[in-house]
Amino acid sequence: MTAKNRLVYSTNPDFVPYDNTEDKVETLLPSSQTLYISRDKKQRKGKQVTLVEGFAGTSADLAALGKMLKSKCGAGGSVKEGVILVQGDFREKIKEILERLGYKCKLKGG
Image (cartoon, rainbow, N blue to C red; front, top):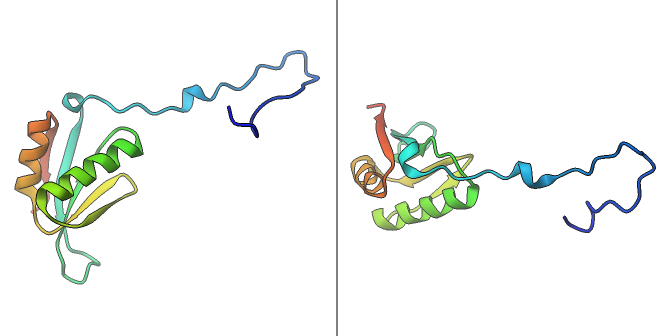
């Protein structure tokens, strides 16, 4: 607990201290996750991006996966709101990389 969340004194005889360890999100094993890969160019001035959606885990693990995919593709991108964006059309390459890592992948869209 941080210093701000630490209980100093309570007059309530039925008080149960709050346990913040329940809020932790664990990353599922790659074999138990299905990731959806799609291409998008809407509201991007005609430029294509590859989207990877459906990751279940911590934001740090998602950012690490996004960084690895961007470096393997040699492209830029970002991780926003649980979605990995890689600049360019790399659907097949990303599918191969993720399948080698043990993820189940499905191509979505045209």
